[in-house]
Image 1 (tube, rainbow, N blue to C red):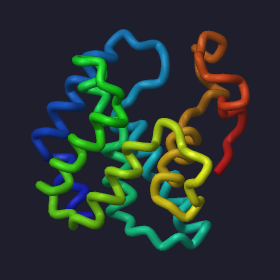
Image 2: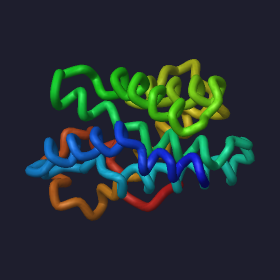
Image 3: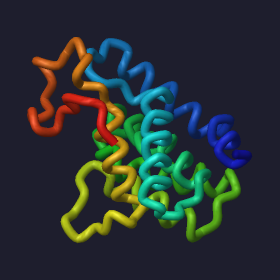
Image 4: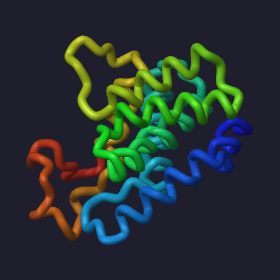
Length: 161
């Protein structure tokens, strides 16, 4: 996955990830690191395969790696991460060889992954990202379970795909 490797070596990506890591040094709840993003990517790809949706593997991994990239701006300036993330992701994706159509699909998914609207089809990339992001958290083993702000029905009580 040549273009995904380019993301991992992209200066903008690495600067943002370093900023997120620094801002979350003392965070007790779920982190927004590469481990989380790769978990999202793997779950999204499983959904893609199981539901025979046909999305490109590199696009799924790129989307997942970049879905929380806007947290650097959220922590610095207060800009919602899904809004800032789609702008940052567009620059990174362009530098890493993704087409305009791929950039549009990926940034649309990123900009709407925080809350999905009722009219989104389960065949859309943004729906896969939303589901995979939520499923990536192992709430059932979290030390901060009782203090978490997620509603009980949102918390992952079991391993589910």
